Image 1 (cartoon, rainbow, N blue to C red):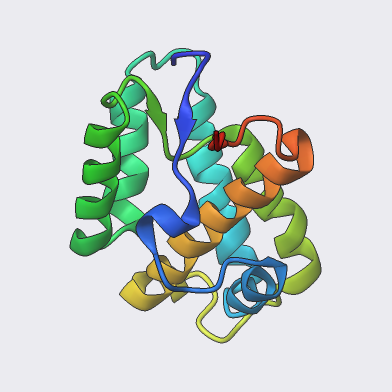
Image 2 (cartoon, rainbow, N blue to C red; image 1 turned 135 degrees about the vertical axis):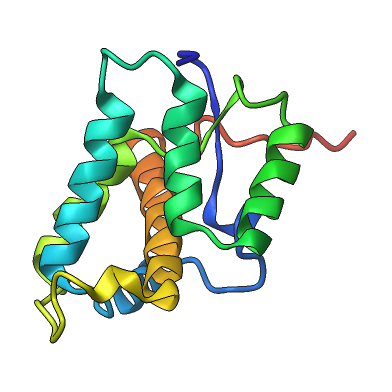
Length: 153
């Protein structure tokens, strides 16, 4: 993976939806704990696997499993506008660990645990949680140091 990437944010795929910690907590609490930990860990194993050097396939797996056609179209548009697949990262380890961290605090096992992610709406919520977690991680780790700023003259 390119060590310098543009990270996809929540608002790039879900414009108009609130993207703050309260919204993140609300969405996350709708997910079943064990299923969330399972799928986040599985995605982490895929993304972090040093034996698989096909970064595009790693990212594509997450898109195929958790994002719907409209969201994939928005991701593809963002990728095209920001230098291509080699320059954009959707899923990354810090984001995934952030989900695990907060899921342990805000999720509970729900009825049908082990099968809740069969529901497309639950997978969509998980996709939203992943992107919000990436935003939270970036803010916690980097603050505003890498935001594009417009200079007015």
